[in-house]
Length: 626
Image (cartoon, rainbow, N blue to C red; front, side, top):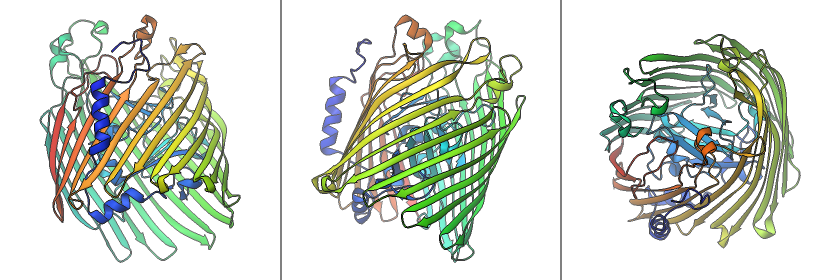
Protein backbone atom coordinates (compact mmCIF):
# COMPACT_ATOMS: atom_id res chain seq x y z
CA UNK A 1 0.00 0.00 0.00
CA UNK A 2 1.24 3.48 -0.83
CA UNK A 3 2.02 5.20 2.48
CA UNK A 4 1.16 8.59 1.01
CA UNK A 5 -2.44 7.51 0.39
CA UNK A 6 -3.83 8.44 3.78
CA UNK A 7 -7.40 7.79 2.81
CA UNK A 8 -6.90 4.49 1.04
CA UNK A 9 -8.48 1.89 3.30
CA UNK A 10 -7.78 -1.52 1.85
CA UNK A 11 -7.12 -3.80 -1.06
CA UNK A 12 -9.76 -4.77 -3.61
CA UNK A 13 -9.85 -8.31 -2.22
CA UNK A 14 -10.70 -7.08 1.26
CA UNK A 15 -13.51 -4.85 0.02
CA UNK A 16 -14.91 -7.61 -2.15
CA UNK A 17 -15.01 -10.12 0.69
CA UNK A 18 -16.53 -7.56 3.05
CA UNK A 19 -19.17 -6.68 0.47
CA UNK A 20 -20.08 -10.31 -0.04
CA UNK A 21 -20.35 -10.73 3.71
CA UNK A 22 -23.06 -8.10 3.87
CA UNK A 23 -25.17 -10.19 1.58
CA UNK A 24 -24.89 -13.61 3.09
CA UNK A 25 -23.29 -13.95 6.53
CA UNK A 26 -24.44 -13.58 10.09
CA UNK A 27 -24.34 -13.74 13.90
CA UNK A 28 -24.07 -16.48 16.51
CA UNK A 29 -27.35 -18.26 17.02
CA UNK A 30 -29.66 -18.34 19.95
CA UNK A 31 -33.28 -19.45 20.18
CA UNK A 32 -35.55 -18.09 17.44
CA UNK A 33 -37.76 -16.05 19.73
CA UNK A 34 -34.75 -14.39 21.36
CA UNK A 35 -33.12 -13.69 18.00
CA UNK A 36 -36.20 -11.79 16.91
CA UNK A 37 -36.13 -9.72 20.06
CA UNK A 38 -32.45 -8.88 19.51
CA UNK A 39 -33.03 -7.42 16.07
CA UNK A 40 -35.85 -5.11 17.05
CA UNK A 41 -34.87 -3.97 20.54
CA UNK A 42 -34.28 -0.41 19.34
CA UNK A 43 -35.36 1.38 22.54
CA UNK A 44 -32.03 0.90 24.34
CA UNK A 45 -31.31 2.74 27.56
CA UNK A 46 -28.17 4.37 28.94
CA UNK A 47 -27.00 4.65 32.54
CA UNK A 48 -23.53 6.16 32.14
CA UNK A 49 -24.58 9.27 30.18
CA UNK A 50 -26.44 10.89 33.12
CA UNK A 51 -25.85 8.45 36.00
CA UNK A 52 -29.46 7.38 35.86
CA UNK A 53 -31.36 5.14 33.48
CA UNK A 54 -32.69 7.00 30.43
CA UNK A 55 -33.83 5.88 26.97
CA UNK A 56 -31.05 6.54 24.47
CA UNK A 57 -33.51 8.66 22.45
CA UNK A 58 -33.48 11.17 25.33
CA UNK A 59 -29.68 11.25 25.71
CA UNK A 60 -27.86 14.20 24.17
CA UNK A 61 -24.35 12.73 24.46
CA UNK A 62 -22.93 10.22 21.98
CA UNK A 63 -23.33 6.78 23.53
CA UNK A 64 -23.04 3.27 22.07
CA UNK A 65 -24.71 0.47 24.02
CA UNK A 66 -23.66 -3.15 23.45
CA UNK A 67 -25.52 -6.02 25.15
CA UNK A 68 -24.08 -9.48 25.74
CA UNK A 69 -25.56 -10.82 22.49
CA UNK A 70 -23.91 -8.16 20.35
CA UNK A 71 -20.63 -8.37 22.26
CA UNK A 72 -20.40 -12.09 21.58
CA UNK A 73 -21.48 -12.07 17.93
CA UNK A 74 -17.93 -12.30 16.63
CA UNK A 75 -16.69 -14.67 19.34
CA UNK A 76 -13.93 -12.20 20.19
CA UNK A 77 -12.14 -13.53 23.23
CA UNK A 78 -11.24 -10.15 24.74
CA UNK A 79 -13.01 -6.79 24.85
CA UNK A 80 -10.15 -5.03 23.06
CA UNK A 81 -11.33 -6.82 19.89
CA UNK A 82 -15.07 -6.66 20.54
CA UNK A 83 -14.94 -2.84 20.71
CA UNK A 84 -12.88 -2.21 17.57
CA UNK A 85 -15.98 -1.47 15.47
CA UNK A 86 -17.41 1.19 17.79
CA UNK A 87 -17.34 4.54 15.92
CA UNK A 88 -14.77 6.90 17.41
CA UNK A 89 -12.52 4.20 18.94
CA UNK A 90 -9.20 2.89 17.63
CA UNK A 91 -7.60 0.01 19.58
CA UNK A 92 -3.97 -1.07 19.39
CA UNK A 93 -1.80 -3.73 21.02
CA UNK A 94 1.94 -4.44 21.27
CA UNK A 95 1.68 -7.89 19.73
CA UNK A 96 -0.94 -10.40 20.86
CA UNK A 97 -3.36 -10.49 23.82
CA UNK A 98 -1.90 -9.19 27.05
CA UNK A 99 0.49 -6.83 25.30
CA UNK A 100 0.70 -3.14 26.13
CA UNK A 101 -2.68 -1.63 25.29
CA UNK A 102 -3.49 1.74 23.75
CA UNK A 103 -6.62 3.52 22.61
CA UNK A 104 -7.38 6.58 20.48
CA UNK A 105 -10.76 8.20 21.15
CA UNK A 106 -12.02 10.80 18.70
CA UNK A 107 -8.48 11.65 17.69
CA UNK A 108 -7.21 11.84 21.28
CA UNK A 109 -4.31 9.37 21.34
CA UNK A 110 -2.71 10.17 24.70
CA UNK A 111 -5.81 11.11 26.70
CA UNK A 112 -7.40 7.96 27.99
CA UNK A 113 -11.10 7.51 28.76
CA UNK A 114 -12.20 6.48 32.21
CA UNK A 115 -12.89 2.73 32.34
CA UNK A 116 -15.47 1.52 34.85
CA UNK A 117 -15.95 -2.13 35.77
CA UNK A 118 -19.21 -2.68 37.64
CA UNK A 119 -19.10 1.02 38.52
CA UNK A 120 -15.49 0.85 39.82
CA UNK A 121 -12.79 2.99 38.26
CA UNK A 122 -10.16 0.44 37.22
CA UNK A 123 -7.06 2.46 36.40
CA UNK A 124 -3.81 1.65 38.18
CA UNK A 125 -3.67 4.02 41.20
CA UNK A 126 0.14 4.08 40.90
CA UNK A 127 0.73 5.10 37.28
CA UNK A 128 -2.77 6.03 36.10
CA UNK A 129 -2.88 3.44 33.30
CA UNK A 130 -6.40 2.28 32.49
CA UNK A 131 -7.21 -1.40 32.75
CA UNK A 132 -5.95 -3.26 29.69
CA UNK A 133 -9.09 -4.20 27.75
CA UNK A 134 -7.00 -7.00 26.28
CA UNK A 135 -7.22 -8.66 29.72
CA UNK A 136 -11.03 -8.51 30.05
CA UNK A 137 -12.92 -11.54 28.73
CA UNK A 138 -15.83 -10.73 26.46
CA UNK A 139 -17.68 -13.80 27.75
CA UNK A 140 -17.85 -12.32 31.25
CA UNK A 141 -19.36 -9.01 30.06
CA UNK A 142 -23.11 -8.56 30.09
CA UNK A 143 -23.16 -4.98 28.81
CA UNK A 144 -20.82 -2.19 27.68
CA UNK A 145 -21.57 1.50 27.25
CA UNK A 146 -19.13 3.70 25.32
CA UNK A 147 -19.75 7.35 26.19
CA UNK A 148 -17.79 9.79 24.04
CA UNK A 149 -16.91 13.43 24.65
CA UNK A 150 -15.71 15.16 27.85
CA UNK A 151 -17.38 13.66 30.95
CA UNK A 152 -15.50 15.12 33.94
CA UNK A 153 -18.65 16.89 35.15
CA UNK A 154 -19.99 13.42 36.00
CA UNK A 155 -16.86 11.34 36.57
CA UNK A 156 -14.06 13.72 37.53
CA UNK A 157 -10.42 13.44 36.52
CA UNK A 158 -9.39 11.32 33.52
CA UNK A 159 -12.79 11.39 31.79
CA UNK A 160 -11.49 13.94 29.27
CA UNK A 161 -11.80 11.43 26.42
CA UNK A 162 -15.05 9.80 27.57
CA UNK A 163 -16.10 6.75 29.58
CA UNK A 164 -16.16 3.01 28.84
CA UNK A 165 -18.47 1.33 31.34
CA UNK A 166 -18.36 -2.48 31.54
CA UNK A 167 -20.79 -4.64 33.50
CA UNK A 168 -19.91 -8.26 34.15
CA UNK A 169 -22.52 -10.99 34.44
CA UNK A 170 -24.41 -10.20 37.63
CA UNK A 171 -27.56 -10.97 39.58
CA UNK A 172 -30.37 -11.24 37.07
CA UNK A 173 -28.34 -13.31 34.58
CA UNK A 174 -30.12 -16.42 33.33
CA UNK A 175 -30.45 -18.99 36.11
CA UNK A 176 -28.28 -22.10 36.09
CA UNK A 177 -24.75 -23.20 35.39
CA UNK A 178 -22.56 -22.63 32.33
CA UNK A 179 -19.28 -24.07 31.11
CA UNK A 180 -17.09 -23.48 28.08
CA UNK A 181 -14.01 -25.23 26.69
CA UNK A 182 -12.05 -24.03 23.68
CA UNK A 183 -8.83 -24.62 21.75
CA UNK A 184 -7.17 -22.54 19.05
CA UNK A 185 -4.09 -21.43 17.16
CA UNK A 186 -0.85 -20.75 19.04
CA UNK A 187 -1.65 -23.72 21.28
CA UNK A 188 -4.35 -21.75 23.06
CA UNK A 189 -6.65 -23.27 25.68
CA UNK A 190 -9.72 -21.64 27.22
CA UNK A 191 -11.86 -22.85 30.10
CA UNK A 192 -14.81 -21.28 31.84
CA UNK A 193 -17.27 -22.20 34.56
CA UNK A 194 -20.06 -20.11 36.06
CA UNK A 195 -23.41 -20.13 37.81
CA UNK A 196 -26.24 -17.67 38.35
CA UNK A 197 -29.36 -18.05 40.44
CA UNK A 198 -31.79 -16.61 42.94
CA UNK A 199 -33.64 -17.72 46.04
CA UNK A 200 -36.13 -15.46 47.75
CA UNK A 201 -34.63 -11.99 47.93
CA UNK A 202 -31.10 -13.28 47.22
CA UNK A 203 -29.58 -13.41 43.71
CA UNK A 204 -26.02 -14.17 42.65
CA UNK A 205 -23.64 -14.81 39.78
CA UNK A 206 -20.09 -16.21 39.80
CA UNK A 207 -17.65 -16.97 36.97
CA UNK A 208 -14.12 -18.35 36.56
CA UNK A 209 -12.30 -18.01 33.22
CA UNK A 210 -8.83 -19.29 32.32
CA UNK A 211 -6.81 -18.57 29.17
CA UNK A 212 -3.44 -20.16 28.37
CA UNK A 213 -1.60 -19.46 25.11
CA UNK A 214 1.90 -19.98 23.76
CA UNK A 215 1.30 -16.84 21.66
CA UNK A 216 3.52 -15.56 18.88
CA UNK A 217 6.58 -13.34 18.70
CA UNK A 218 5.47 -9.74 19.21
CA UNK A 219 8.43 -8.43 17.20
CA UNK A 220 10.26 -9.73 14.16
CA UNK A 221 12.38 -12.85 14.85
CA UNK A 222 14.88 -11.39 12.38
CA UNK A 223 16.02 -8.99 15.12
CA UNK A 224 17.81 -11.83 16.89
CA UNK A 225 17.47 -14.78 19.23
CA UNK A 226 15.96 -12.73 22.07
CA UNK A 227 13.12 -11.69 19.77
CA UNK A 228 12.50 -15.05 18.10
CA UNK A 229 10.66 -16.91 20.85
CA UNK A 230 6.88 -17.01 21.22
CA UNK A 231 5.40 -14.66 23.82
CA UNK A 232 3.31 -16.65 26.27
CA UNK A 233 0.14 -15.14 27.75
CA UNK A 234 -1.89 -16.57 30.66
CA UNK A 235 -4.98 -15.07 32.28
CA UNK A 236 -7.12 -16.21 35.20
CA UNK A 237 -10.17 -14.08 35.96
CA UNK A 238 -12.64 -14.61 38.80
CA UNK A 239 -15.77 -12.49 39.12
CA UNK A 240 -18.82 -12.54 41.30
CA UNK A 241 -21.81 -10.46 42.32
CA UNK A 242 -24.55 -10.84 44.89
CA UNK A 243 -27.64 -8.81 45.72
CA UNK A 244 -30.16 -9.14 48.53
CA UNK A 245 -33.49 -7.31 48.71
CA UNK A 246 -34.21 -6.46 52.34
CA UNK A 247 -37.55 -4.93 51.37
CA UNK A 248 -39.27 -3.35 48.38
CA UNK A 249 -37.28 -0.15 48.91
CA UNK A 250 -33.95 -1.35 50.33
CA UNK A 251 -31.34 -3.70 48.86
CA UNK A 252 -27.67 -4.44 49.46
CA UNK A 253 -25.13 -5.56 46.87
CA UNK A 254 -21.51 -6.61 46.48
CA UNK A 255 -19.30 -7.42 43.50
CA UNK A 256 -15.66 -8.28 42.90
CA UNK A 257 -13.35 -9.02 39.95
CA UNK A 258 -9.90 -10.58 40.36
CA UNK A 259 -7.39 -10.80 37.49
CA UNK A 260 -4.07 -12.66 37.53
CA UNK A 261 -2.08 -12.38 34.29
CA UNK A 262 1.36 -13.33 32.97
CA UNK A 263 2.63 -12.05 29.63
CA UNK A 264 5.99 -12.23 27.88
CA UNK A 265 7.25 -9.50 25.60
CA UNK A 266 10.22 -8.79 23.34
CA UNK A 267 13.16 -6.46 24.17
CA UNK A 268 11.92 -3.57 22.00
CA UNK A 269 13.47 -1.64 19.12
CA UNK A 270 16.89 -3.27 18.56
CA UNK A 271 18.33 0.16 17.67
CA UNK A 272 17.83 1.17 21.31
CA UNK A 273 18.93 -2.08 22.95
CA UNK A 274 22.44 -1.82 24.41
CA UNK A 275 24.34 -5.05 23.90
CA UNK A 276 22.80 -8.51 23.68
CA UNK A 277 19.65 -8.94 25.81
CA UNK A 278 20.51 -11.43 28.53
CA UNK A 279 17.48 -11.50 30.80
CA UNK A 280 13.85 -12.47 30.49
CA UNK A 281 11.15 -9.99 29.48
CA UNK A 282 7.80 -10.56 31.12
CA UNK A 283 5.11 -8.86 33.18
CA UNK A 284 2.80 -10.11 35.89
CA UNK A 285 -0.29 -8.42 37.27
CA UNK A 286 -2.62 -9.08 40.15
CA UNK A 287 -5.68 -6.85 40.24
CA UNK A 288 -8.64 -6.83 42.60
CA UNK A 289 -11.63 -4.55 42.16
CA UNK A 290 -14.44 -4.77 44.71
CA UNK A 291 -17.55 -2.79 45.63
CA UNK A 292 -20.21 -3.02 48.33
CA UNK A 293 -23.20 -0.79 48.80
CA UNK A 294 -26.90 -0.29 49.23
CA UNK A 295 -29.74 1.15 47.18
CA UNK A 296 -32.61 2.61 49.16
CA UNK A 297 -35.52 5.04 48.92
CA UNK A 298 -35.62 8.04 51.25
CA UNK A 299 -38.97 9.24 49.92
CA UNK A 300 -41.34 8.29 47.11
CA UNK A 301 -39.49 10.65 44.77
CA UNK A 302 -35.99 10.28 46.26
CA UNK A 303 -33.72 7.25 45.80
CA UNK A 304 -30.13 6.89 47.02
CA UNK A 305 -27.13 4.68 46.51
CA UNK A 306 -24.21 4.52 48.94
CA UNK A 307 -21.11 2.54 47.98
CA UNK A 308 -17.54 1.73 48.99
CA UNK A 309 -15.11 0.70 46.22
CA UNK A 310 -11.65 -0.79 46.54
CA UNK A 311 -8.91 -1.21 43.93
CA UNK A 312 -5.64 -3.06 44.48
CA UNK A 313 -3.32 -3.24 41.45
CA UNK A 314 0.12 -4.86 41.56
CA UNK A 315 2.10 -4.95 38.31
CA UNK A 316 5.67 -6.17 38.04
CA UNK A 317 7.59 -5.96 34.77
CA UNK A 318 11.00 -7.49 34.09
CA UNK A 319 12.86 -6.00 31.13
CA UNK A 320 16.18 -7.68 30.37
CA UNK A 321 16.11 -8.98 33.94
CA UNK A 322 15.56 -5.54 35.54
CA UNK A 323 12.31 -5.13 37.52
CA UNK A 324 9.86 -2.25 37.35
CA UNK A 325 6.96 -2.17 39.80
CA UNK A 326 3.74 -0.14 39.71
CA UNK A 327 1.57 -0.93 42.70
CA UNK A 328 -1.23 1.12 44.18
CA UNK A 329 -4.50 1.08 46.09
CA UNK A 330 -7.63 3.19 45.82
CA UNK A 331 -10.49 3.58 48.29
CA UNK A 332 -13.59 5.39 47.08
CA UNK A 333 -16.76 6.33 48.95
CA UNK A 334 -19.80 7.74 47.15
CA UNK A 335 -23.37 8.75 47.93
CA UNK A 336 -25.52 9.30 44.83
CA UNK A 337 -29.06 10.69 44.97
CA UNK A 338 -31.78 10.85 42.33
CA UNK A 339 -34.68 13.18 43.04
CA UNK A 340 -37.75 13.47 40.82
CA UNK A 341 -38.56 17.11 41.49
CA UNK A 342 -41.56 17.04 39.16
CA UNK A 343 -42.76 15.28 36.03
CA UNK A 344 -40.27 17.10 33.81
CA UNK A 345 -37.24 17.55 36.09
CA UNK A 346 -34.93 14.96 37.64
CA UNK A 347 -31.95 15.89 39.74
CA UNK A 348 -28.91 13.63 40.20
CA UNK A 349 -26.46 14.80 42.86
CA UNK A 350 -23.61 13.13 44.64
CA UNK A 351 -20.67 13.40 47.00
CA UNK A 352 -17.49 11.35 46.47
CA UNK A 353 -14.30 10.93 48.46
CA UNK A 354 -11.27 9.07 47.12
CA UNK A 355 -7.90 8.07 48.58
CA UNK A 356 -5.07 6.86 46.34
CA UNK A 357 -1.92 5.19 47.64
CA UNK A 358 1.17 4.79 45.50
CA UNK A 359 3.05 1.84 46.98
CA UNK A 360 5.89 1.74 44.42
CA UNK A 361 6.94 5.39 44.43
CA UNK A 362 6.61 8.48 46.59
CA UNK A 363 3.26 10.17 47.00
CA UNK A 364 -0.32 9.67 48.14
CA UNK A 365 -3.31 11.88 47.43
CA UNK A 366 -7.01 12.27 48.12
CA UNK A 367 -9.88 13.92 46.28
CA UNK A 368 -13.20 15.29 47.51
CA UNK A 369 -15.86 16.08 44.94
CA UNK A 370 -19.49 17.08 44.57
CA UNK A 371 -21.55 17.03 41.40
CA UNK A 372 -25.07 17.79 40.22
CA UNK A 373 -26.81 16.80 36.99
CA UNK A 374 -30.14 18.36 36.01
CA UNK A 375 -32.22 16.32 33.56
CA UNK A 376 -35.12 18.24 32.02
CA UNK A 377 -37.85 16.86 29.79
CA UNK A 378 -38.74 20.27 28.44
CA UNK A 379 -41.43 18.91 26.11
CA UNK A 380 -42.45 15.65 24.48
CA UNK A 381 -39.78 16.32 21.84
CA UNK A 382 -36.98 18.13 23.72
CA UNK A 383 -34.72 16.87 26.53
CA UNK A 384 -32.00 19.00 28.13
CA UNK A 385 -29.30 18.37 30.72
CA UNK A 386 -27.04 20.75 32.60
CA UNK A 387 -24.45 19.55 35.07
CA UNK A 388 -21.35 20.66 36.96
CA UNK A 389 -18.75 19.20 39.29
CA UNK A 390 -16.15 20.47 41.74
CA UNK A 391 -13.04 18.42 42.60
CA UNK A 392 -10.54 19.32 45.33
CA UNK A 393 -7.36 17.23 45.12
CA UNK A 394 -4.58 17.28 47.69
CA UNK A 395 -1.86 16.96 45.02
CA UNK A 396 -2.86 19.23 42.13
CA UNK A 397 -5.54 21.56 43.50
CA UNK A 398 -9.17 22.14 42.58
CA UNK A 399 -11.00 21.84 39.26
CA UNK A 400 -14.52 22.86 38.21
CA UNK A 401 -16.09 21.28 35.12
CA UNK A 402 -19.49 21.43 33.46
CA UNK A 403 -21.50 19.91 30.60
CA UNK A 404 -24.75 20.66 28.74
CA UNK A 405 -26.62 18.42 26.28
CA UNK A 406 -29.83 18.39 24.26
CA UNK A 407 -31.88 15.84 22.34
CA UNK A 408 -34.66 17.02 20.02
CA UNK A 409 -36.90 14.46 18.34
CA UNK A 410 -38.44 15.24 14.96
CA UNK A 411 -41.29 12.76 15.13
CA UNK A 412 -42.76 13.67 11.73
CA UNK A 413 -39.39 12.85 10.16
CA UNK A 414 -38.60 9.81 12.34
CA UNK A 415 -35.38 11.63 13.24
CA UNK A 416 -33.67 13.51 16.01
CA UNK A 417 -30.90 16.07 16.53
CA UNK A 418 -28.63 15.88 19.58
CA UNK A 419 -25.58 17.65 20.84
CA UNK A 420 -23.31 18.31 23.81
CA UNK A 421 -20.61 20.66 25.05
CA UNK A 422 -18.46 20.18 28.11
CA UNK A 423 -15.16 20.73 29.87
CA UNK A 424 -12.85 18.12 31.34
CA UNK A 425 -9.41 17.53 32.82
CA UNK A 426 -6.83 14.76 33.07
CA UNK A 427 -4.79 14.53 36.25
CA UNK A 428 -1.00 14.09 36.26
CA UNK A 429 0.11 10.67 37.46
CA UNK A 430 2.04 10.02 40.67
CA UNK A 431 5.15 9.39 38.60
CA UNK A 432 4.80 12.71 36.76
CA UNK A 433 4.25 14.56 40.03
CA UNK A 434 6.56 12.90 42.54
CA UNK A 435 9.32 10.91 40.84
CA UNK A 436 12.59 12.08 42.39
CA UNK A 437 14.37 12.51 39.03
CA UNK A 438 11.68 13.42 36.50
CA UNK A 439 8.66 14.51 38.55
CA UNK A 440 7.31 18.05 38.86
CA UNK A 441 5.07 18.87 41.83
CA UNK A 442 3.96 22.08 40.07
CA UNK A 443 2.29 20.21 37.21
CA UNK A 444 -1.25 21.28 36.39
CA UNK A 445 -3.90 18.88 35.10
CA UNK A 446 -4.44 18.88 31.37
CA UNK A 447 -7.62 20.83 30.63
CA UNK A 448 -9.96 20.12 27.75
CA UNK A 449 -13.22 21.07 26.16
CA UNK A 450 -15.22 19.20 23.57
CA UNK A 451 -18.42 19.31 21.59
CA UNK A 452 -20.47 17.15 19.26
CA UNK A 453 -23.56 17.60 17.09
CA UNK A 454 -25.41 14.58 15.76
CA UNK A 455 -28.30 13.72 13.48
CA UNK A 456 -30.14 10.38 13.48
CA UNK A 457 -32.72 9.18 10.98
CA UNK A 458 -34.95 6.10 10.92
CA UNK A 459 -36.12 4.63 7.59
CA UNK A 460 -37.93 1.55 6.28
CA UNK A 461 -40.33 1.42 9.19
CA UNK A 462 -37.56 1.70 11.76
CA UNK A 463 -35.44 -1.11 10.31
CA UNK A 464 -32.76 1.19 8.87
CA UNK A 465 -31.01 3.49 11.37
CA UNK A 466 -28.59 6.17 10.16
CA UNK A 467 -26.43 8.36 12.38
CA UNK A 468 -23.86 11.09 11.72
CA UNK A 469 -21.99 13.10 14.37
CA UNK A 470 -19.57 16.00 14.04
CA UNK A 471 -17.12 16.38 16.94
CA UNK A 472 -14.27 18.54 18.15
CA UNK A 473 -11.81 18.52 21.06
CA UNK A 474 -9.23 20.95 22.38
CA UNK A 475 -6.69 20.16 25.11
CA UNK A 476 -4.43 22.71 26.78
CA UNK A 477 -1.49 22.28 29.16
CA UNK A 478 -0.57 18.89 27.68
CA UNK A 479 2.01 17.16 29.84
CA UNK A 480 5.23 16.35 27.96
CA UNK A 481 8.74 15.36 28.97
CA UNK A 482 11.80 17.53 28.26
CA UNK A 483 14.11 16.20 30.96
CA UNK A 484 11.31 16.61 33.52
CA UNK A 485 7.56 16.60 33.05
CA UNK A 486 6.01 19.99 32.18
CA UNK A 487 2.80 21.46 30.82
CA UNK A 488 4.21 22.18 27.38
CA UNK A 489 1.83 21.72 24.47
CA UNK A 490 -1.72 21.89 23.08
CA UNK A 491 -3.78 19.45 21.05
CA UNK A 492 -6.86 19.67 18.83
CA UNK A 493 -8.97 17.15 16.96
CA UNK A 494 -12.06 17.40 14.74
CA UNK A 495 -13.92 14.80 12.76
CA UNK A 496 -17.11 12.99 11.90
CA UNK A 497 -18.57 9.63 12.92
CA UNK A 498 -21.11 7.82 10.72
CA UNK A 499 -22.96 4.57 11.25
CA UNK A 500 -25.77 2.59 9.63
CA UNK A 501 -27.67 -0.44 10.89
CA UNK A 502 -30.19 -2.31 8.77
CA UNK A 503 -32.45 -4.85 10.48
CA UNK A 504 -33.52 -6.65 7.31
CA UNK A 505 -35.70 -9.24 9.04
CA UNK A 506 -35.73 -11.52 12.08
CA UNK A 507 -32.68 -13.37 10.73
CA UNK A 508 -30.46 -10.82 9.03
CA UNK A 509 -28.95 -7.52 10.09
CA UNK A 510 -26.20 -5.45 8.53
CA UNK A 511 -24.03 -2.67 9.89
CA UNK A 512 -21.44 -0.20 8.68
CA UNK A 513 -19.45 2.62 10.27
CA UNK A 514 -16.93 5.24 9.20
CA UNK A 515 -14.96 7.72 11.31
CA UNK A 516 -12.75 10.53 10.01
CA UNK A 517 -10.39 12.24 12.48
CA UNK A 518 -8.00 15.14 11.96
CA UNK A 519 -5.75 15.81 14.97
CA UNK A 520 -2.82 18.20 15.43
CA UNK A 521 -0.33 18.99 18.17
CA UNK A 522 0.65 22.63 18.72
CA UNK A 523 -1.34 23.69 15.67
CA UNK A 524 0.96 22.20 13.02
CA UNK A 525 2.18 18.66 13.78
CA UNK A 526 -0.02 15.77 12.67
CA UNK A 527 -0.85 13.80 15.79
CA UNK A 528 0.68 10.40 16.48
CA UNK A 529 -1.38 7.19 16.41
CA UNK A 530 -4.42 8.85 14.80
CA UNK A 531 -5.52 7.20 11.53
CA UNK A 532 -7.51 9.67 9.44
CA UNK A 533 -10.02 7.03 8.36
CA UNK A 534 -11.45 3.99 10.14
CA UNK A 535 -14.30 1.98 8.64
CA UNK A 536 -16.06 -1.28 9.44
CA UNK A 537 -18.64 -3.57 7.84
CA UNK A 538 -20.52 -6.44 9.40
CA UNK A 539 -23.35 -8.87 8.83
CA UNK A 540 -25.25 -11.24 11.12
CA UNK A 541 -27.67 -14.01 10.12
CA UNK A 542 -29.44 -16.84 11.90
CA UNK A 543 -30.98 -19.87 10.21
CA UNK A 544 -32.19 -23.43 10.76
CA UNK A 545 -34.86 -22.19 13.15
CA UNK A 546 -32.33 -20.10 15.02
CA UNK A 547 -29.86 -22.93 15.59
CA UNK A 548 -27.20 -21.80 13.13
CA UNK A 549 -25.55 -18.41 13.38
CA UNK A 550 -22.94 -16.85 11.12
CA UNK A 551 -21.05 -13.62 11.63
CA UNK A 552 -18.55 -11.69 9.55
CA UNK A 553 -16.96 -8.34 10.20
CA UNK A 554 -14.29 -6.31 8.45
CA UNK A 555 -12.18 -3.46 9.80
CA UNK A 556 -10.29 -0.97 7.62
CA UNK A 557 -7.73 1.43 9.11
CA UNK A 558 -5.79 4.05 7.13
CA UNK A 559 -2.14 5.02 7.53
CA UNK A 560 -0.86 6.87 10.60
CA UNK A 561 2.31 8.09 12.26
CA UNK A 562 3.41 5.51 14.81
CA UNK A 563 6.14 7.49 16.60
CA UNK A 564 7.69 10.94 16.76
CA UNK A 565 10.74 9.57 14.96
CA UNK A 566 8.66 8.28 12.05
CA UNK A 567 6.87 11.63 11.89
CA UNK A 568 10.19 13.40 11.55
CA UNK A 569 11.05 11.12 8.63
CA UNK A 570 7.60 11.36 7.08
CA UNK A 571 7.18 7.57 7.31
CA UNK A 572 3.74 6.26 8.25
CA UNK A 573 2.48 2.87 9.29
CA UNK A 574 0.63 1.43 6.31
CA UNK A 575 -3.15 1.13 6.41
CA UNK A 576 -4.63 -2.34 6.71
CA UNK A 577 -7.78 -4.42 6.52
CA UNK A 578 -8.79 -7.31 8.80
CA UNK A 579 -11.69 -9.68 8.18
CA UNK A 580 -12.98 -12.08 10.85
CA UNK A 581 -15.56 -14.87 10.67
CA UNK A 582 -17.51 -16.75 13.34
CA UNK A 583 -20.11 -19.50 13.35
CA UNK A 584 -22.23 -21.02 16.12
CA UNK A 585 -24.48 -24.07 16.02
CA UNK A 586 -26.96 -24.99 18.76
CA UNK A 587 -26.51 -28.76 19.03
CA UNK A 588 -29.13 -29.19 21.77
CA UNK A 589 -31.30 -26.93 23.87
CA UNK A 590 -28.47 -26.64 26.39
CA UNK A 591 -25.31 -26.86 24.29
CA UNK A 592 -23.70 -25.16 21.32
CA UNK A 593 -20.44 -25.34 19.38
CA UNK A 594 -18.58 -22.42 17.85
CA UNK A 595 -15.82 -21.67 15.40
CA UNK A 596 -13.92 -18.42 14.87
CA UNK A 597 -11.43 -17.61 12.11
CA UNK A 598 -9.50 -14.42 12.75
CA UNK A 599 -7.70 -12.41 10.07
CA UNK A 600 -9.24 -14.49 7.28
CA UNK A 601 -7.16 -12.76 4.59
CA UNK A 602 -3.91 -13.39 6.52
CA UNK A 603 -3.10 -9.67 6.38
CA UNK A 604 0.34 -8.59 7.61
CA UNK A 605 0.01 -5.31 9.48
CA UNK A 606 1.14 -3.35 12.52
CA UNK A 607 -1.03 -1.45 15.00
CA UNK A 608 2.08 -0.15 16.76
CA UNK A 609 5.32 0.42 14.89
CA UNK A 610 7.65 -2.57 15.15
CA UNK A 611 5.09 -4.98 16.64
CA UNK A 612 3.49 -7.85 14.75
CA UNK A 613 -0.13 -8.93 14.85
CA UNK A 614 -1.74 -12.35 14.58
CA UNK A 615 -1.71 -14.10 11.21
CA UNK A 616 -4.74 -16.08 10.05
CA UNK A 617 -5.86 -18.07 13.09
CA UNK A 618 -8.69 -20.32 14.22
CA UNK A 619 -10.35 -21.36 17.47
CA UNK A 620 -13.27 -23.60 18.32
CA UNK A 621 -15.12 -24.73 21.40
CA UNK A 622 -18.25 -25.96 23.08
CA UNK A 623 -20.56 -24.21 25.53
CA UNK A 624 -22.87 -26.03 27.94
CA UNK A 625 -25.75 -24.78 30.08
CA UNK A 626 -26.95 -26.86 33.01
